[in-house]
Image (cartoon, rainbow, N blue to C red; front, side, top):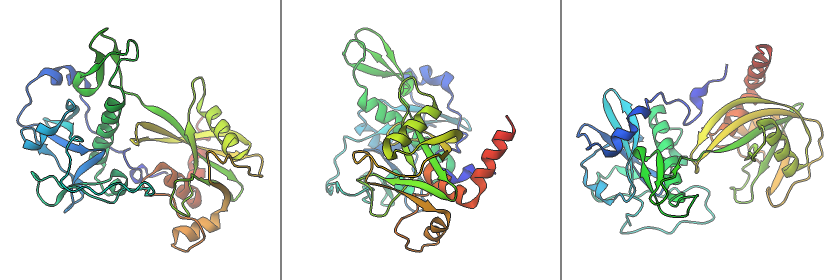
Length: 328
């Protein structure tokens, strides 16, 4: 059986309490409520124990939040919120390195304890408790949506947050707008003992992963998998099997993991989409996971791509798909 505990953002059983969202929009904040904090997509982390920092709702840092709070839900009678303080400017801020895939810098707000700092979520996602990871993933995706959807798609006027951050309403025509989630297929393409892996031009040296792409209007998951593989590598495939999904708040995607067998072998890449694509044997991947330099790096732990690849290498992914097929 596949161990879903190995996937980031997939294991939170937090009660979203959707029936309370209208009330939490206008209700005076309860003093027993707590909030997580984001700054430019980075969550506030207690670096002593690698957990989210939850602050009281009267903390002075919240005065710098320019976006309406988001009600995330309840746990054990306590309301949980999220605030974004991206307008805060640290006194010393190193410019981002445009060639860096991850941001290893951390930021400290003067009103917080020294061990409470903002960290890149991609760097710490596998170390967070499951519930923390689910909460911050939800908050990050919602704030990304608010930032990019500030105007009404119907009339073009300004929209405002409502339903405790789960909706935006046009201030002129009244049209409601709802959070956007972008569906993406990510696929494990096999050819016997070999796996098709590709790399994007901006990725770190030697980093390869599964092919992936957005689902287009009118497409099934299966059609999107076949189209993306054909467009990016000119490889034809057979039947497609859905395996599992993962919310991916970079910025607002839902990844649908699939597996399919290739019916052709000659790769011709689309140079706009890919820097390279190769067939990699199971034996080579075993060496890569063992730390041996084989010219490729294992995919990042916690992401669905790494989960699919590792379980294929172990044989558990094939067994799971066989179980699904037998149960139909």
